[in-house]
Image (cartoon, rainbow, N blue to C red; front, top):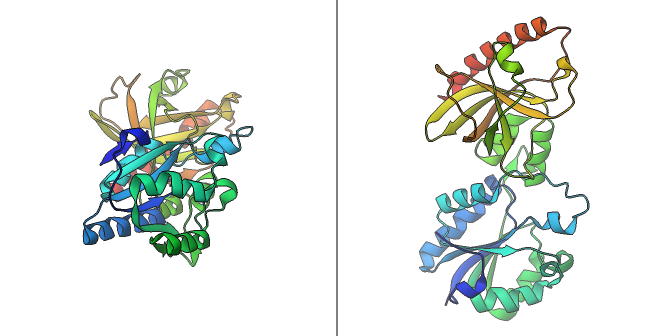
Length: 312
């Protein structure tokens, strides 16, 4: 897969089959559309192209709040896109100036000169351009005038409800991790760096690795205890993850700490680890004493160990 972040470095393509969008989390609906794109590109013998944006448009258009937490980092999305078989990805630097470009100018000045799409595929709710004027109906009319076949892909449903990034985000924020994973079509995952913590876990005989997400706008699932799996080149282990503020000790800073079920606890400080969220065990709660907390942690660990057999 070829990746471009500057249109000047891309030689104009004679013909392509193309889609455009933010693709905030490559969920089942996105996977369906991109798979269709790849299939069509093979049938016609022309490159498949995905045009996307970074940063996410809402991080620019809603800059004051900057409140949209991300389901996936750009690198994670690119890895999935490559696995599906897309040939070319063009990443547009989304800024305030670019946000003022009309849908028509975007098509006439960027998409057609550079990619000359024979076919464009988008979802039923897709919009682009200034004021979101690049709707499916706009594209249908534009395609008729410019000899581009516009294909609108129907959404993928879950219990008669359309799968979407916003819905998956809501599932995660409300703690419904398995439902989120189902709609994602994979485990909710992000990468983090192991950093030094307070050392409290070691004192409780539950040594933990404190994780700081690499993506600054990373979404955290609802506070609580989770069964997770951590991976890097030299490490692969299930673990028990706590996301919260440690109320038993009167703290208020949000932390993410993982007790890994590894025979020999390695020195992971500074290591980059991939964290997969598998099951939610319970809410975070305050215990009357550290002794009561340890009792609960032992119970949580056994539950996690029992559940981990489902994922081996």
